[in-house]
Length: 147
Image (cartoon, rainbow, N blue to C red; front, side, top):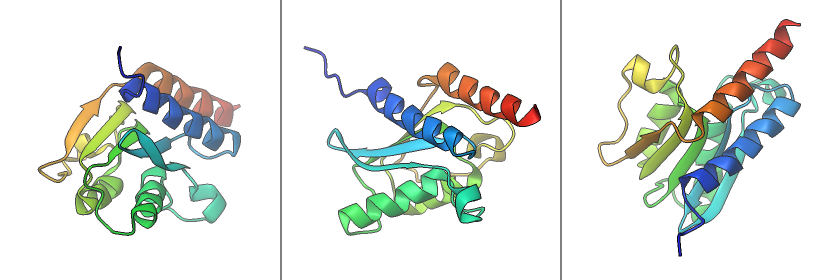
C-alpha cells in the first residue's frame, strides 16, 4: 500500500496555510515542517499583521520547529512551502541545516535560485509540487489587490 504521507499530501497542508494568509490580507505563502510524517510547524506569512518584513512563512516555521524540537538545527526535517523561498529565507534555511525543502511555484523575480543563494550542501530540493495551485492562489491575491 502506498504511503499517503507524501509530498503532495503535505503541500496541500501548506496550501491551506497559504489560504489562511490570503484571508488575512497577507501574501498567500504557507508552510509546514514535517519530521517522521508528523507536522511540527504550520505557518503562513505574517508581515502585515506583525509589521515585520522578516515575518515570512518560512522564518515563522523555522522558529516554531526549532522550539518544538528544542534545538536550532532541523536535520531530518522537511519544509513544504507554496512559493520558492527568497534569499533571506534560504539563508535562514541554510543555517538551520534543514534536510529537505519542497516548494510549489517558482518565484522568478525574488526566489533563491534566481538570486543565486546557496542552501546547505546536504539540503535536498524538490520543486513544482502543486505549483499550479500555488501560482493560481498568488495570481488571485494580486488580482484582488488591483481591484
